[in-house]
Amino acid sequence: MKRDIVVDVGPHETRVAILEDGQLAEYKIEREEEVVGNVYVGRVENVVRGLDAAFVEVGIERNVFLHVSDAMPEEPSRHQMRRKMGSFPPIGEVVKAGQEIMVQVTKGPMELKGARATRRVSLPSRYLVLVADGRNKVGVSKKIDNEGERKRLRDLAQKVRPDGFSLIVRTRAEGATVTDFEDDIKFLLKIWRSIQNRSKQVKAPALIYEDTSLVYGVFRDIFDAEVDSFVVNDKVAYDRVLNLCANVAPHLRNRVELYRGEEPIATHYGIQKQIERALRPKVWLPHGGHIVIEQTEALTTIDVNTGKFVAAKSLEDTVLRTNLEAAEEIARQLRLRDIGGIIVIDFIDMDNRRHRRKVTEALRDAFSTDRMKTRILHITRLGLIEMTRKRTGPSLGRQFQVACPCCEGRGRILSAATVAQRIVDDLRAANIEEPHEAYLVWADPEVTLTLIGPHGEYMPDMEKTVGANLYVRCTTDIHPEHYEITGATDKQLAERRLPYKVGQILTIDPADIVSAPAMGLVVDVDGYIVEIPEVSPKRERLLKARLTRVDRSYGRASPVSSSSG
Image 1 (cartoon, one colour):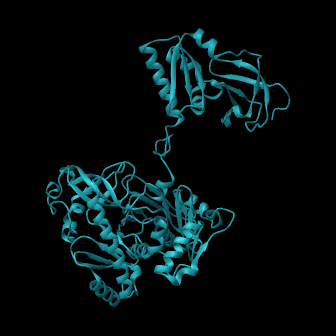
Image 2 (spheres, rainbow, N blue to C red):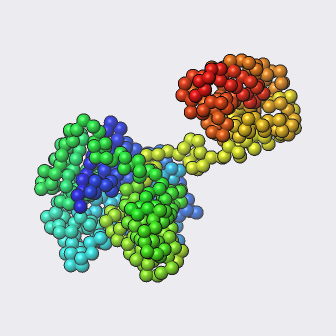
Image 3 (cartoon, rainbow, N blue to C red):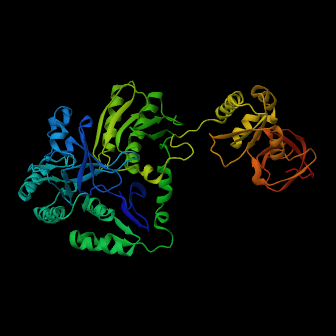
């Protein structure tokens, strides 16, 4: 497999793409507000016993959340983590309000949730992670599955481990030497001493260690002999990467390239189009099936569908092949979209137990190359799989997108028919509470057309229902769910809002056209709906039309010339 790292340094942010055979596998963004990995001296703002947690002020927008399991100086045992509630001392005995403590952010803020932190600072390097927890333990990445290599690496780490610290041997340490580990330990202890010294010099809240830049993190965690190229579009960043190579990995120096092309680097490598596809909920599978990915506040759901896939010999084979394709694509999409937390996958129902086991194994295999920690539970007879994936910050979608101001993030708005009915109800209520001779209604064009009906035929009955004359007008400057109702005398509204007469010539601009295919050409003349049935709604030129009918909320006209579109 060909692997490339593409670094796009811009004036406001840095973006890093990991390509595998030209396909976007991971995408990382670094902005000024990044806080994950940073170490702070903070002040405990308040202790919430009902949550077994405290909130710590560290100097960022929202106080960080510190659960009792993260507030303990030593790493909790597996027994404690399994039992959780009742296995920890009360939070009030671990930290006190007003106390100054050192914390490290482990998860970034998510919408209404603040960042999450721990008191046990961990510092990663190329091969090792130094953990200041006082346990004197050594752990080896579970992704190194060779028992002989695991024992060798554990023994090496035990030799170089400083007293009072734990070490975690990273996946990429496979094949590393004692010299590699010693170099990492010197580097990490230097950072730790700097953090300790800084913590004694500042007053809470204060930042005392800022995590490394995205480019350095990618160099440290991903760039190795299996990467074919490390392409950078910025000379300063390029020189820094070369300097890192000279100090840490001189054998990789010839794989670092400075991009000099005229077109943007993201365009050159086809990254932008792949990002656009990654922001869509629906993803097509190779043989016509598809998956739909939906993120919510609590969890992410993924629905698997056969779609157009009918090539298999039987329905059972179609379902199995679609589910197997989906398993591979789900792992790729979660990694690319950087989706974490609780994930529920709704595979297509399988009655065959062997098929269910096969799909579960395929999903586990697909996640074997994911750098994030994942936990996959068994598949149910209904085809549901629950899984978790480690989350450290917002997903790709939440970084690129904001909640729609129109639907406020719901993904749906009220239908035009629903809003129209609400208008009628509010008009009736208004005329009972404070009667007026007439009412002016402003609404979205689609709502207006629904309200007045085809050719304005709903208006007479509506005026009888309300008990007043109605002047309905449309505007694009109003939210589709909103409307305005104003009461007045009929004379006032007729003078202000009905300055038209039968026989009057109107000049129609194509920009005034309102979409209403069932009614021919429909235009908005200063909010007044006018239908010109003889003209195509696809009209693209100016048109002169003579009014043949003028009602309070609806008008009809005919083209003046024979050129009717």
